[in-house]
Length: 446
Ligand code: B12
Image (cartoon, rainbow, N blue to C red):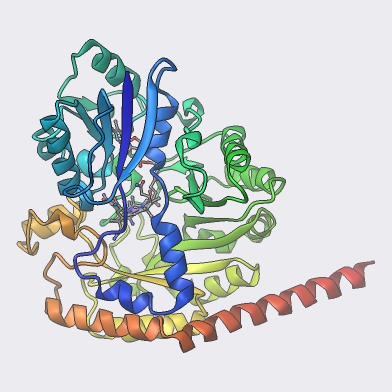
């Protein structure tokens, strides 16, 4: 039996103007191309737990209408996010026309399983690992069930995670790779559509397992750069510090996502720098308390830290780690001042990179439920707008056009080459200052 593991690849935007603005200078253009080329870790993971007598092939389809479909597979496993659900459904339909059984999984189908089940022979809801062996066995018997739901069983333990089949990737196509050290997040943001929606627990992968994956990629590819497919890497401090100590021996550079809490731990920041951390991405969402109020639903974690944002960014960046600050536009309570607020925050903090997105109701999130109840979704069907760069809701204090206009203008200002260069220079200046300071302290101590 031969299974095709298929990702619907490429970035998605209904209105590409934002990217064009952000991409108008070479450094960002290069980075976007590299990021876009990330392979699907979910599919490689499932291939890694497929029995050895089955042939596995990893494939990316860019255009689900136009790309020729291979006919060599006995079954296909397709992964999709909310924004690509419709394309994945179309792909399932095309494979089924060819008589090839289709299994569909990922965040997209997990959040809209009933819709997915209309197109796929089988839909896997939640994490794939606990169910994949049963799916493969049923495929071999020709007795697929319509829905497999991981949420109905015990939580998956990352100590049992298989080695992803990185060897299925063509050797010169990918400049970056994803590896995962943890899943979930203790924060509970109303809009979050990441792995907390696959399984609600926060869990970590044993350090040795993670390092083995890093080593496997180093074996297979020349000087790989790592993007952690994590939600919030440093929450479990003991695990995070052990991970950093182990990574420091691997001579690698990497990027991950986390929260502002790292700024409160000097030891951790030092370990991160020594372990090759190039950049961390932090969801600040907004620099204003009133806008953040209620966004994190457990303890108002984010709002309670709004006053410390600037100081925290400076502190992290002084350790030689750049911060990519994510700001969300169109949050309730955010009026026209949100654009100026963002610009001021970027300037005051010296954020090295800024990522701006619209508040995005993904189906199956609390935000989607609330906006739907309030009649504020522009369309309940338009999941192709789940890109973070397209608006699909009625903002509470302005019109959709005003939100879009302010956003595009802000993008022009934030990504203006002069402002980018100014932030880069500031980062380097701070870094040189720190290196000098460290040298001075070392020589004073010796
Ligand atoms: C790496 C990454 C990317 C990479 C690779 C995407 C990919 N194909 O995997 C790139 C850069 C290409 C990317 C692009 C996009 N991304 Co992205 N990305 C991530 C990130 C950081 C990690 C995802 C990951 O690798 N997780 C780890 C793996 C192991 O988990 P997994 O893929 O979910 O797979 C598990 C299960 O879902 C399941 N499973 C998955 N597929 C299948 C298939 C079958 C058959 C089965 C049985 C099971 C199964 O089993 C796996 C193991 O348990 C997350 C944020 C985060 N912190 O999670 C955002 C995230 C997934 N991305 C997001 C978005 C919006 C996008 C874009 C739409 C952005 C854009 N405007 O273009 C595009 C869409 C690309 C596309 N064509 O589909 C959202 C998606 C939300 C949602 N519910 O849809 C997230 C959550 C970020 C966010 N801020 O909200 N992304």
